[in-house]
Image 1 (cartoon, rainbow, N blue to C red):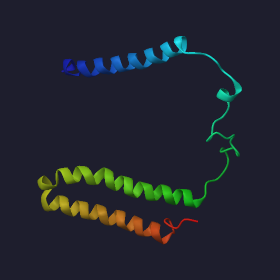
Image 2 (image 1 turned 30 degrees about the horizontal axis):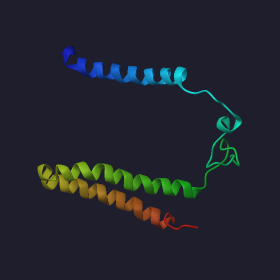
Image 3 (image 1 turned 90 degrees about the vertical axis):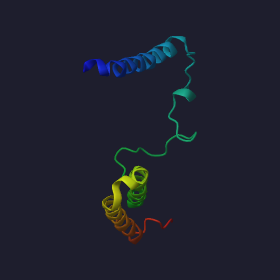
Length: 119
C-alpha cells in the first residue's frame, strides 16, 4: 500500500528540492547591491504613515470582509453543486436551497447594517 504513495512522495521531494535549490542559487548568484531605498519599507512608494500594531479597524472593514465571505463561500460551494446537480436530485436541490436562504439572510443583514453604502 505504501508503494502507491511513492510517486506522490517523490513529487513532493522534488518540489521541495526545487524550491530550496532556487532560494540557495539566488542567494549565491544573485546581485547584491543594497541601498537605503531598497531596504526601506514600501507602501505604494510612500513611507507608512501609522503603525498598524495597536490600531483598531473600523466596523466598515469587517462589514466588507463579511460581504466578501458571503459571496466567496457561495461561489465555492455553488460550482461543485452545479456540476453534480443531476446526480443529487431533489434532495440536493433542497439542500442548496437551504444554503442559499442562509446566505440570503446574511446578505440582508449586511444590507441592513449598511455594508453596501460607501462614504
